[in-house]
Amino acid sequence: MKKAILATKIGMTQIFDETGALIPVTVLQAGPCVVTQVKTVENDGYSAVQVGYMDKRSKLVNKPVKGVFDKAGVSYKRYIREFKLEDAENYKVAQEIKADIFAAGDKVDASAISKGHGFQGAIKRHGQSRGPMAHGSKFHRHAGSNGSATTPGRVFKGKHMPGQMGGVKVTIQNLTVVQVNADQNLILVKGAVPGPKKCLVTLKETVKAI
Image (tube, rainbow, N blue to C red):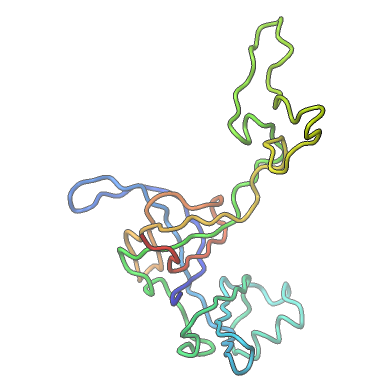
């Protein structure tokens, strides 16, 4: 992995390519991110770049975190993330990373926290079918049998049951970058990206290009 950036999800829209085909895209406000620390194999045992994204008011930053930004000589940031990069030594502290590190046609992996749906039943959460809705039926939206009574006499791990839905980290791989607007730091990615609007999205060069 050699390229990565933090972005904010703006929303979805559609554009037309040169052949007139309609392409659904997710618009991401990517960066600018600033390098707050460069980690090397000699110093830290691995090669990585620590970046900050989105300005934050100083009164909302505690003293230890302020020290990180003051040492780097950059303004206080809301998000700090670390990317393991093989060429981390090529980055400099306080260097800006902008949307133009990606180009149209690049393949990326997008990670974000998915939309939270609260506690949901098996029908909504796992797509199971309901029972008859007539008055004689005693089975409507129940999950059904959970396990046998004797052998093995327990509920198997991974059984589809009601529970918390969403609110977990989701990564979608091999998304295609359709367009990059370097002036406004916008990246248009084909298809859907996890998370609600205004959520933090991590874009990385894909690890499983097809």
